[in-house]
Image 1 (cartoon, rainbow, N blue to C red):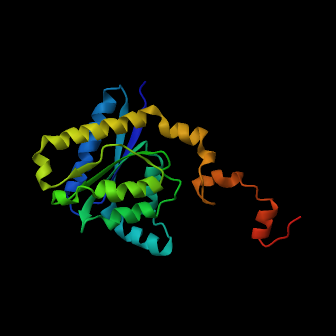
Image 2 (cartoon, rainbow, N blue to C red; image 1 turned 135 degrees about the horizontal axis):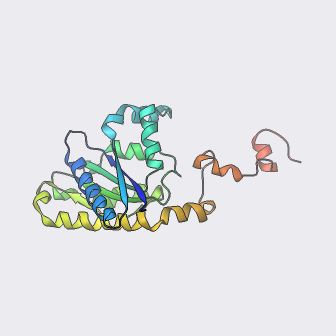
Image 3 (tube, rainbow, N blue to C red; image 1 turned 30 degrees about the horizontal axis):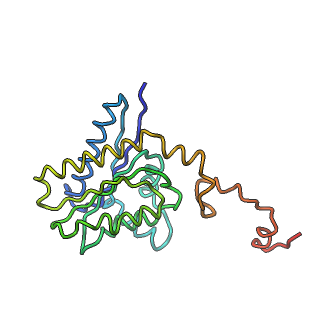
Length: 222
């Protein structure tokens, strides 16, 4: 029996429908087709950030994670692959998208495969994905596929966009089905630098009874 994978689409589009969501959906559709050819299946969940805007803002200023935002974070935690798609505003990725990923735990997305995508009204913004988005996802220690996706107004009628979508989807499927994330988390998790309180408790291998930790807690060293 084939394996079932979970793909999560994160869209920062603010209209309904939006070209940002359309681009992400086309990637997701191609991923579904490619996985099916391997006698496997993929379920796709969409996280619409415009529906979480208020909770994202609250989390930024108060560190309070609302219920809808918590559900979105849990969905990402169990993702085998991610498509992150944003509109471009004033030569930059949407603040809605960057704010969402900035409030995530630094350990949440380690080794997860990601396709990065952006849309804009003009090709002058084509470098936003590589110039701005890749740095953020590198900090989160994801594995971004080599092919970046960008679609301006004129690109939708260009077969070149379809070819780039096919290429990015194939790269994502190759990473998802290889078991790369599981291997990293199972065999190399301890070699990463983790913040205390992150990683779902795996940091509890810290020796809390050491002199340093007792001093930090206001006690005395032996």
